[in-house]
Length: 167
Image (cartoon, rainbow, N blue to C red; front, side, top):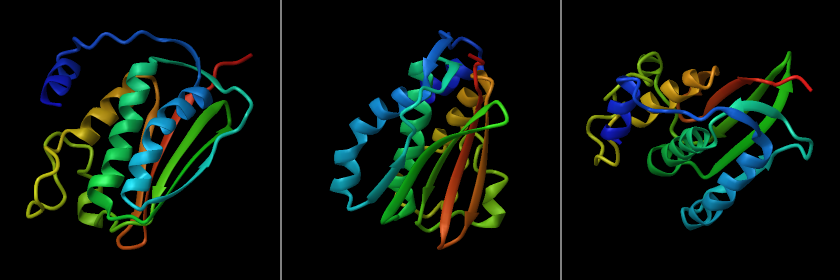
């Protein structure tokens, strides 16, 4: 992951942006995660419209974004449930990834996307503090945005937004 961050940070990561159906891309990525959620006793709910939502993305970068967010649920959240949904609003595609795990403390929420930042320094290191920094960098390179909502011991929700390509 350090290599990925170094390439992104140095602007050496080449993205291949083209029109893609983000709903279909999401289904492909999710299909690879179902057995991992089941193995970790995480119940899941997906709400992805059948209609195509086209946006200009790099499908490999989008997969890395979703993979990193899913890895956080499995490795760090202690969640028993997660939800993934895709919707549109005001010419944007909105993706919500929510879990019912331990959440992120208020003091950590402004720092969570910083390189090498880890919320719990005492945890058995299942990460290096680069996953969410890479997510944020890739989302920005795809002309999107990412925000976080979290209430400790209730839920954590990552909200992604990408421009919807007009028909």
